[in-house]
Length: 155
Figure 1 (cartoon, rainbow, N blue to C red):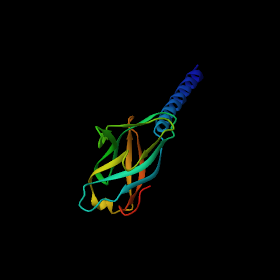
Figure 2: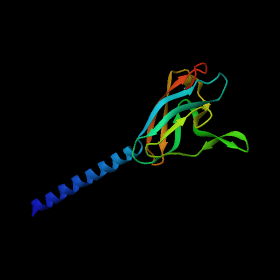
Figure 3: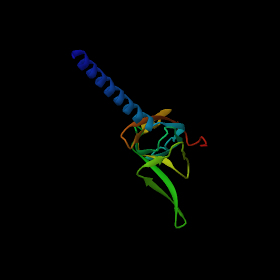
Figure 4: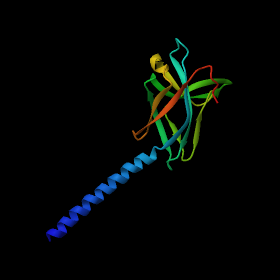
């Protein structure tokens, strides 16, 4: 009888650990995005803002939603896009950004981009800067962005 009780407790313990491991690995799986060609325009002296560009690919197998971004480069990092409204191109702030399974989102001049607002110019003197992306489930993923001079051409 004691052996059966001990066996039941052990099976229960291992089952719970396996379930929590699966739940944790599923959360990590949900937020797998590939970040390519990530760069930030080096700010013009005296300017408080700059823009960032990249290509994001959702390789997780599930739709993911980015709800925030943050970086030591700026007080605020926002997702922005350009839209045509009444014949005028306007920049708009996006509250979040959903990337569907296997979808590629290209951040580029005149379209979707990151806005770095309230720059720390000492950070802008570096060659790279980290940007942390926050997902709707609270998890985070860090990308490294090259800081490019305004004299270098963006592709």
